[in-house]
Length: 142
Image (cartoon, rainbow, N blue to C red; front, side, top):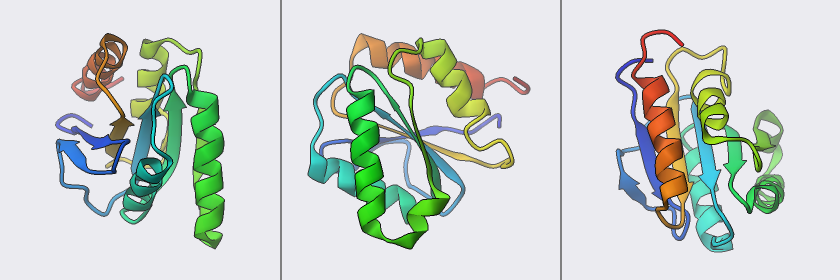
């Protein structure tokens, strides 16, 4: 996994903020929110990431449980393929545990995973999570 990067997407409109482009590949997407998100923007993120192969959506932050439910609704409304997609909420887990799971365990049978993270605004809490994720990505073995 060394050399991988995290692609940042805006939860407000689905646009790529950093690290793009999105490629067709097994993908895991971490959705981070403490309350602010746009349903239209979240739908854009889901549409954009499922089209390239996202098979796992993780939610984290104070709004993780709400986001999880909304992601499930969006996936269910999108068609039959949603049954192949896993979602999970990690609301109260510390950044280190979320980062470890995101990088190492979300898609354990895949060796070349694309990582996306989507958020509405940058915070110190988000930066701490990103630092943990980068740390795991830059290790040769975890």
